[in-house]
Amino acid sequence: MSAPEVRRRPGGRSARVRAAVLEATLELLLARGLEGLRVSEVAARAEVNETTVYRRWGTRENLLIDALLDATEQLRVPDTGSLRDDLIAYAVDLAEFLATPVGHALERTLAVAGDDPDTRRARDHYWASRSALSTQMITRAVDRGELPATVDPRLAIEMLVSPVHFRIVLTREPIDAGMPALLVDALLGGLARASGTPPGT
Image 1 (cartoon, rainbow, N blue to C red):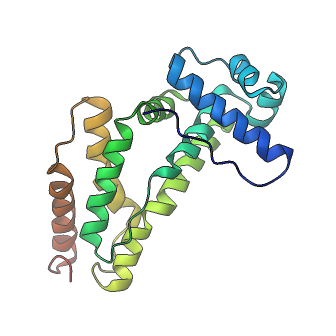
Image 2 (cartoon, helix red, strand yellow):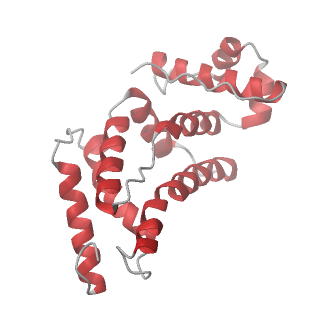
């Protein structure tokens, strides 16, 4: 997969600088890898001063997380009208994304980023942004009566995506075609047993 094209946003110079820097970051990340990425080279490719990059992002890790968060906007959150179908489609898309060079870079960056306050804020922002989107599938299902209101949306999503992350990132094993449905059915069965209601009711 080639580096995703940066969506050119309307706005002034600040928006153009951000778009150029994020595009350059992804291009160099895919070309050089995490260890070979240098802020100085990002600045040169984006045609901005290196001090501009540090002033806006503070650290290389913050820049990486912002660039990768921008790239993950391609991960859609399905709305099929069925929780099971939504979750299966989401798990399939996630597995496909994590298997790409950008997906691998995202996981490695989040894993090795330090715990200084700026980096922690950047990492927290990434997970909060992804959670706010993905948990919509659960809250919509609650509204439709497919799940009880006692279900924790974030925990439900974490229970689905954790095995995908583990398989793709840690064991480097492929996700076969039937695995997303197996994970979703196990999750929904567990939620149903915990609430004392049949799945999907």
